[in-house]
Image 1 (cartoon, one colour):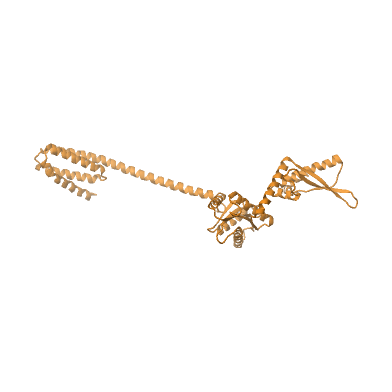
Image 2 (tube, helix red, strand yellow):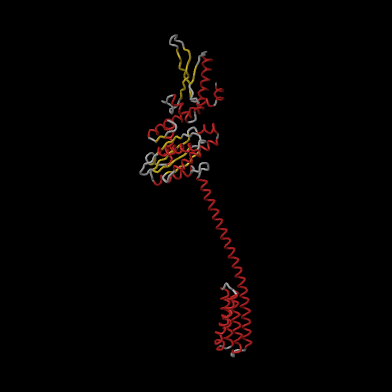
Length: 416
């Protein structure tokens, strides 16, 4: 920096020497105006200059050059020129100091602004990282690492919107509750992780898997030229589970059952497609656990029929609309009535025309079996009391139940 200052001393001196002819040619007033004008130019230069020390060196060099020119200047008295020069230097020095303070203030503001920008950028980066983490958390199942139900449904909607053909497969672990109850929930979690790992490994670029909740999983497979279907996806998962158990014998025996529906052949929207895959899965469970079933249109009729029966059972339980009719057992040798079987009869169009076995099967499948058994036992108790008190009949009798109440022995004993 000192070398640069020395150079600008010379620059200022040369500048002053260049102004000698002008000073000699001017009278006193013109020279004074010229000096003031030059001072103004120097002040402007200093205002826009970010190197006050260099500027000061050039000013000092200029002042020395003017001082040396005083004896040669005859148009104005030397003391007038000296006074003007001194005033000029004082003004320039003051302006230079003010400019230096402004420069320091500007530099401080620049540093503070840079720090603020860096803090802002760090805040943006932290918020972006938090957003990505929140998005990942919102779209990922924390146990298996697969996509969760939200992301699965989003992917399903996207494929339907694009109109691309694909298969939707729903699968779950057979008797998963038994694994939790018999081996503990930690073993159940290991089983879920095992299935999740196999699904993640089987998922190719045209296959997407997710955990939908509990022990239920979903697979979306694009149907390209190879026409992959739900059976192919289920087969890959079963093979993966078998290979995994060979490597890790601590994983419990896992059986999966699944059902598949196809877009757009079986349904054109998400809800109908899910319903179709669910019906296919329930049909597979009813036929043989550990298998797979593709949706067919006759399943819709079966589903509607079961739904109608289930609604009728719910209404019958709520309104207590059930009656018992005794069918006697007669000894053909003696002709005597030796007992009777109590048969349930329901009122209402929803249950009309459906067999006794069909009604109880649907009740148990839809979680209504225990409630229906309680209602039947209540009506059975009332009928036995009526036979005894009104007709003085005491015979061995029996009644048909769904069997669901056997899972709650306390309720069964209370009714008996």
